[in-house]
Length: 78
Length: 388
Image (tube, rainbow over all chains, first blue to last red; front, side, top):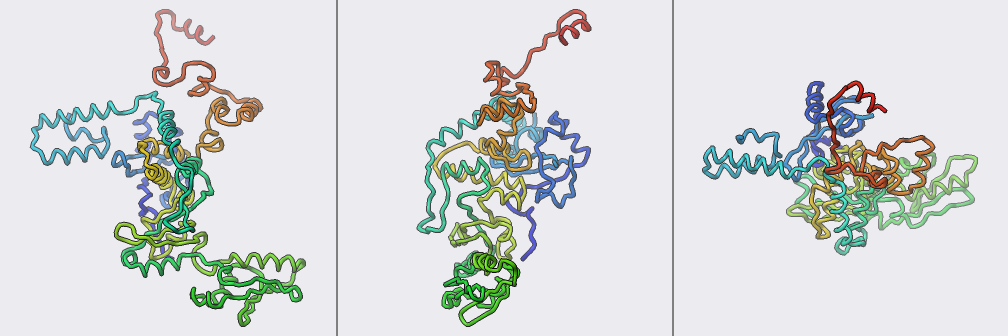
């Protein structure tokens, strides 16, 4: 048995929790309400350590095959 | 328009490529700006317009090559135990988000000192392989007079596999509760603690003991060390990502399984999305077909939108559509329409298929924008008029 970080796995992109100001910026940029964002479960293995609650927005920086690097947002759901 | 203005307006890869291309050449500032402007224009021209029916384009892009896919499952290079589901059945498995896949498989990568020598790789493979009691026992019998289960051991096989009686006793001790274990010469005797229905219990124990794991990891039934580029990896039949990652020799950053739900539970929804993309493009590549990555990415995005993996089935994303008519037009229409009428559901006709059913303009392309005309006249009066 050993301890390992799932964040290091090649399939797992970087997850960052946003603060209130950043959330507002994102929603203004896309001109949407928070309900329209894709969701992520609060029990999701990756964000367990980020100490999230319902309504938080997670910024995800993916490695994309087509664009190099893309940014994606998910809101923490129920 | 200058080079630094590109950031945020085109994808990272284009910026990097352009930077590389500009470095080697002597280009004046003026020409550079011209190039930047042209790139930006091309990039914006290539973007999807609002109202473009990307869903149907994706569906058609998959549909036609899908007819050319094979329907068989293949064997892995002469090894009967390792099957791989490929072609159309695998694509259906991925996009329907089946929980139980036909051939779960893992690719186990090992850490640096272990992945070069075949001997070491084999040793680790033996450690991982799940060994059940049934493999080292010749016979399971119930002694009816004393109500005992007797396991007659296959001693030579046990010696080969490096398993002792103590291993067995420990494994049974952990695996089955409420039995007394006795050791005889070539036998292990299990006696159920006195209960009401002792014979029945004894029979249950006899069946249960067959599936007790002596060592190794549950669910992994076959291991095959293979060479990939310049290192050895282990292919497995059966999958158990969580426990394999906990083995200290395993490289926990690269080891993957083809079971997408397992990836979701261990590595999260984003990893599952990437796994869907990887698995689908693996099949497509394998079949010698060419489908643009963006279609696969789009499907993976839609499937993982809710934070859970939802297949493209009536219980998955299609079943979650808001419109009653859209759901009814996919599968089992009568059930959907009856349920909707019982619940008093409304259909706002916001999407494509329900408008096709009603012979109306669909909100796509030029049908998407509405026309608003500002008329001269009394505003208050107009408002009332439109309310009616």
